[in-house]
Amino acid sequence: MKDSALTAAVYDGFMAVFEPFLMKKWRRELWSRVEPSRILEAGVGTGLNVPFYRKEYDITALDVNEHFLERARRRARGKSIDAEFIAADVRDIPFSDNTFDSAVTTFLFCQLHDPVKGLEELKRVLKPGGRLLLLEHVKPQGRLENLVSSLSGPIYRLTGEHIAQDTDIYAEEAGFAKVSARPLLMNVVKIIEAEKPAS
Ligand SMILES: C[S@@+](CC[C@H](N)C(=O)[O-])C[C@H]1O[C@@H](n2cnc3c(N)ncnc32)[C@H](O)[C@@H]1O
Image 1 (cartoon, rainbow, N blue to C red):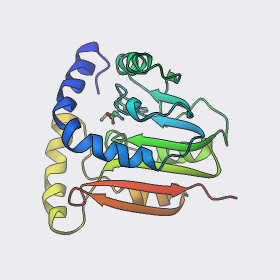
Image 2 (cartoon, helix red, strand yellow):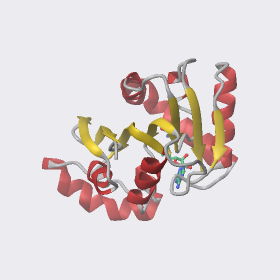
Image 3 (spheres, rainbow, N blue to C red):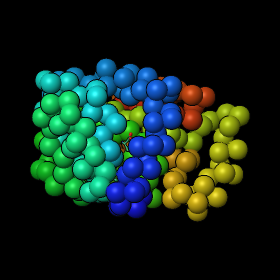
Image 4 (cartoon, rainbow, N blue to C red):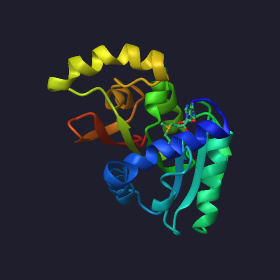
């Protein structure tokens, strides 16, 4: 996604159409599974998850896009949320191994051509037993699989979005344990949970 104030504003405008109906409900469900602890949100974007941050969270949020981060910081200030927002790539997270209790992403992995690398990095910075919680749109199984697969090339060329990611499978490839996926919206969107193995 282009790093510009205009792209950030367009993103928020576009999402405002979908947030009240679908997204808000899914975000609430995802965050209801996050326990108060040291949390990393990767690909925070313009901060559409900020309304779900609880005061008890110790939260660090990262994104590669400075203009998106600026909106996220503003959202947090508006809600008197004390979180740290940093410019960083999920594939090269500037924290030591075993730092966080939970890692959360929403609609990040459709942006990465090398999602396993991002997941391996999230695993590295999670403590043993730490939890991964993702809300992502993925390649569906069943009736929609062929349709989504055939649209994925043109949509990638048009928007740069990978709409047919197997993110739950990539989490296993990255070495996460106890990977479970709860399908939402006809399998096209999933909440994926996993755990960093204890050793
Ligand atoms: C589709 S937006 C989702 C934003 C937000 N999580 C949400 O739910 O509205 C994807 C976000 O991932 C960010 N992003 C893309 N590649 C990234 C990377 N390698 N590391 C960190 N953030 C990245 C983009 O800048 C953008 O803010």
